[in-house]
Amino acid sequence: MSLQQTLKAYKFGIVNYLNALKLQERLSGERKAGNIQDTILSLQHPPTYTLGKRRTDHNLLLTESEVQAMGAELHYTERGGDITFHGPRQAIIYPIISLRAIGFGARKYVEGLESIMIEVASLYGVNAHPGKAGETGVWVGDRKIGAIGVRISSGITSHGLAFNIDPDLNYFKHIVPCGIRDKGVTSLRREAQMQLPEDEVIHDQLIQSFAKTFHFKDMQWSQVSRRPPPAAADRRRLHPTKCSAGGDGQPSAANYTQLNVTLVN
Amino acid sequence: MAMASRLMWASRAASYLKISTCPRAFSTVIKDLKYADTHEWVKVDGSSATIGITDHAQDHLGDVVYVELPEVGSSVNQGKNFGAVESVKATSDVISPVSGEVVEVNTELNGSPGLVNASPYEDGWILKVKLSNNGEVNSLMDSEQYSKFCEEEDAKH
Image (tube, each protein chain N blue to C red):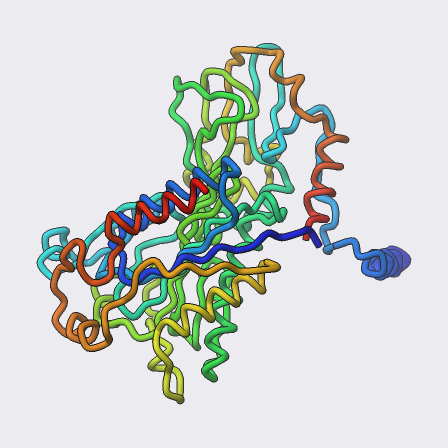
C-alpha cells in the first residue's frame, strides 16, 4: 500500500455552479503542479442543470429561457455523463485528487465513488447498489439516488458525485436524467425509514467514506462558508427563485482570498 | 485443468506475497510499438505514425462510450492532450506520445467507440500523424519497459 498523504476537505454552503467550476480548475492546476495535496470539496448548488462533454441537450425537455424562468441555471461542462440536475439538499462532493499517484484508472475511481454513496445510504438503512453496465450511478431498486460525472485531466480528477439527501425531485421531471428513460429518481429522505440528521452530517460521512475508500491516512477540515438556516432552504425549495450572488453562504471574495493564502502556504 | 490450478497457485502465492493480481493480470503489450507513460501507443512508419491507447488503458477505463477526435490538419504535441475518451461517466484526457500534424482520424470510433476496448492496437486506433520530430520516439518506452511500468503502476494499490 502506497503512502497516502492527508486529504484536505473544504466545506462550503451553497455555491454557484460556475464559481465551483473555477475553483476546481484552479485547484486541479495546483494539484497537477504538486503545489497542493489531494483535496475534496463539499457543497450544494442552487438549482442548476448541467450537461457533460457529449452535450446531450436533447435530454433537456425545456428551452434555455424556460430554465431561466424557473430560476435555474444551465451549464455545459467537460465532465463525463449525461444531463443532470443539482439543487439545494443534494450533497455535492468534488474530489481533486491524483489518480496517477495511486495507480487508479477511471473505472476503479468511479467504482470507489459508487461504493461511498452505497455505504452512506446503508447508514440510514437504505440498500443501494451500483448501476448495471452503462448505468454508472447508485440506485435503490430502479430509482436513482446518486449520480456521478467525472473529469480526469493529466491524471487529476474534478467534478465528482451528487447524492440526493432531500432535493426537490420535481426538477428532474424536466430532463431525461442521465439519458435513461423509464427509471425514476429518489432521495435518502424518501427511502430511509428513519429521521435524517442535518445535511452537514451526511456530507461529512461521504467525505469520511471517501477518505477510507481511497486509503488516506489523515484528514484536514476547513469550513469556508455555511448553508443558510433550514427555514430559508425549505422556502427556496418550494418557490424556486434565482439565488442572488453573494448571499446564502456563497464564498465571498474574502473567502477566496483565504483559500488563496492557504494554497500558497 | 492444469492451467487452472497453476493460476490458483499463482493467485495464492501473490496474496501471500501481497502482490495484487486479477484474472487479467497482464494486459497485452505489442512488441515493436512504442509507449508513453500515459498509456498511449505509437506505431512509427517512416515519417508517419499511428496512435492509440493501450490494452492496459482501455481495461482501466471501462467501456468507452465516446471518443473526442482531433481535427484533421491540426497539430498535436508530445505530452499534450489532443482529445478525450468517455467511459463510466468519466472523461479522460488522451495525451499525444509524439508531435506532428494530424493526417487522419478513425471516424469509425464515432459510431463504434467500443472498438477502443475490443481492439485497442488495431481497429481501435485513434489518429495518424505526420511526425514533426522523429527523434521524439526515442524518449518513449519499448514493449518490455512498458510492461514493467504497468506492473509497477498496478502494484500501487
